[in-house]
Amino acid sequence: MNKKELDFILQEGEGLKLEFKESLNNLDKELAALANSEGGRIFLGVSDDGKIKGIKITNKLKSEIQDLANNCDPKIKIKLENFENILIIHAEEGKDKPYKCSSGFYIRQGPNSQKMKRDEIIELITSEGKREFDELENKEFDLKKDFDNNKLADYLRRAEVEKIIPKKKILIEFNILKGGAINNGGILFFSKNPQKFISHSIFTCVLSKNKEGSDIIDRQEIEGSLIEIVEGVMKFIEKNTRVAYKFTGKPQRENIYEYPLESIREAVINSVMHRDYFERGHNNVLRIFSNKLTITNVWQRPSWFKPGRDTFRKNKTIADLFLRMKWVEKLGSGFSRMRRFCKEVNAPIFKLDLDDKYFRIIFFKSKNYLKIVKGEGLVEGLVEGLVENQKKILSLISKNRKISKQELSEKIGISTTAIDKNISKLKQKGLLKRVGPDKGGCWKVKGGRR
Image (cartoon, rainbow, N blue to C red):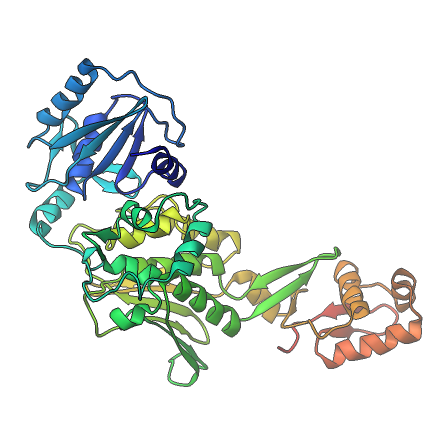
C-alpha cells in the first residue's frame, strides 16, 4: 500500500470488497459478510464518505479484532496491515460457507452488508463451489491486444475516479483481474470487441406495427460493451417511440414522452446486469408494440426470490461496476425507483411476467401522452419544422383559447395578415382548429401529425 493507492481507493469509495469503518462497532458483521461473499478489505479509521479519521493502532486493538474473527462460526481468516493511522483488515473469502457472527448471517450486496434470510442461507449452501459467469477468468483474452484503454478512461470519467495508479492495479481493485487473467465481467465492460469472446451478449430491439408483434417495422442488434449496449437500446427507444410537446408560455416547452423513459432505462440496466449469461441461446430482447413496450431476459430464479421484496444479484462483478458509476443506486432499490419514475410522468406502473427461466417487464403508455391523442390541449409530434412565430401563436392560444387575431398580432409584433398565413399553415399541419364562428368561437390546439 502506498499513498497513491490509498488516494485511489478513497475516491473510488466502498464497494463489493471494500468497507470503510471508523470504529469496531459491528465489525464482526462486516467480516462475516466478506467471508460469505468474495472476501475483501476493511479500512479501519475511514468514514463512510472516504474521509480519513484515523485510529490509534495498538496491540490491544489488533487482539480485539482477531477475537472478533475467531468468535465467528467458523473462524474467519484475517490479516492486518498498518498504513499511517489506518488499520487495513484483509478478510479471506471463506472456504466453509456460510459464516455466522454474533448477530446472524450476512452477505455483501454492493457496498452494503445485508442480513441473510433463511432461504438465502440455504441457497448459499447449495450453490457453494459454483461461480457465476461474470466471475470466470477468460484465458483467451489478451490484456495487451484486446483491452480497450479508451473504454477504461471513459468508465473512470463516468465513475468520477481519477486514474492515479497503474491500469493493472485499477483492474485488481475493480475485481476483474486475477492471476493475470481478465474475468467475463471485465470483458463485457472493457474489451475492444466483447462479442468476440461472449457472442450472445447482444440486445435485440424490435419495433412492431401491431399489438401482436407480427408486423415488424424495425429490428436492430445492439452490440458493444454493456455501457454501449444500454445507451444503444435507449437510442432505439427514443427513435421509435413518440414525444409530445406542451407549450408553457415560456421559451422552453415541456416534453411529454410516450413511455416512462427513466423507468425503462433502469429496466434495461437491470436486464443486462441480472441475465443468465450461461444460457447462450437467448439474447436480451426489447419489443415495442403498438400498445406496450416489453423487456425480456433469461435468468435463474432463486427459490426464495419475491419481486419487490427481496434483493437479487445474479452477476456481482457486473452489478458492482454499474454501482461504481452510479448507474444504479443502492442495490435492491430498482423496483421502487422504477415505480417512482412511472408516477412522476403519470404512467401506469409496469407489470412483471416471470417464471423460473424468463424475466419480462411490461411498460404502458403515459396517461399524459394519451391525453395528447385525445386533443386535450397538448401538441403531439415533431414540431421542429415550425417557425418561431408559429410556436408563439400556439403558446399564446394554449393559455387563452379565445384570443383574437388582433391580440395575437399585437403580442407577437407582426401584421394580422401574417397571423392569418401562420394560422393557415398550423391548420394544414393539424395542430390548430377553430371551434365555432369567428365571433364567440375559440381555438383548439390539436394533436398534430408526426
